[in-house]
Image (cartoon, rainbow, N blue to C red):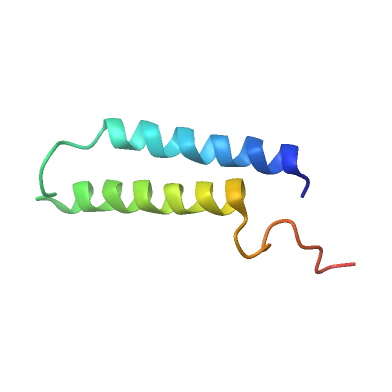
Length: 65
């Protein structure tokens, strides 16, 4: 995956995290749905960091050549 593709996918994951973060209320989550939304935000942010920075070259590596 080249740099342009990684930036696009990372930006999409940031957008997902942003949209889901808007639905969260301030404070500690009190219901299961709030916990699930918080989990989605955390996973989306982790995926965004993975695609944008590629710290371990997991995305840019070409293992199937």
